[in-house]
Amino acid sequence: MMHDWKGAGVGQLDGRVAFITGGARGQGRSHAVALAREGCDIAIFDVADQLEAIPYAMATEADLAKTCQMVEAEGQRCLAIKGDVRSTADVDAAIGRTVAELGGLDIVVANAGVISFHPVETCPDDEWDAIVGTNLTGVFKVLRASIPHLRARGAGRIVTISSMVGRKASPNIPHYVAAKFGVIGLTKGLAQELKGTGITVNAICPATLNSDLFYNDATVRVFFPDRPDATVEDLKSRLLDGLTPIPILEVEDITRAVMHLVLDRGVLTGQALEVGNGMSAFLA
Image (tube, rainbow, N blue to C red; front, side, top):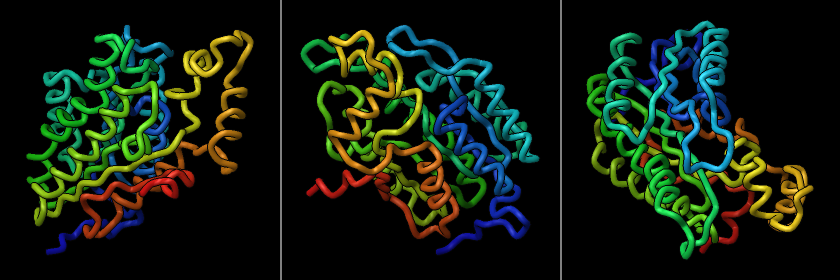
């Protein structure tokens, strides 16, 4: 059974409300602005603070406010909510506030993610807990809190952000790989649970993105431990030489995939959409 989804106005999503985690910068900001351009009101949820176990500079409250300004510049309402996806209380309160202040919930983009680098042998507990807690358990908590409100609307779109390393793995990021594999399993299982409700559930698997999560000084030190002078540009050159001649993905490339899944009439669900920059060719 198909459910009415796209709006009849100028924007294809006029009157819809989207909740986006990790919305202070990067992918989350890009998704928020794109959805606003199609008529969505937006709630952006971000820890907007430094987690002790994360080795690079995370988003700030100023970043969160900037995203909100960008959404409002598109003529839509925006809530900027500070909180941690690992906290059930924070997540439930944020979803509740979104519904109360924006009038409902139609679209969820579970985008919040963090990373660090260690092999399994030396990965410390605090980093394992921070990465798996944010990248997998946080997704679960957001989806769990959202489902009743999506059901109340009679239709909805859930998009989770996994990774190409959730499809093919990679060394030295065991916590990140485990979480991203888990996101795909969670997504596919929930898609089966919500079959026939009008709510679709899909994952996106990006390859390496030109974003602060990966391209930062902490990552450079991992790839160039003996070169204190190495820069982010050196890292980009090394990865291009070693992986693919195709340019590194931009966050907008993932936003186009998000919009494809959100605007679908309801036939795409349980998918793991690879935006893999050619990496899919090496999978069985």
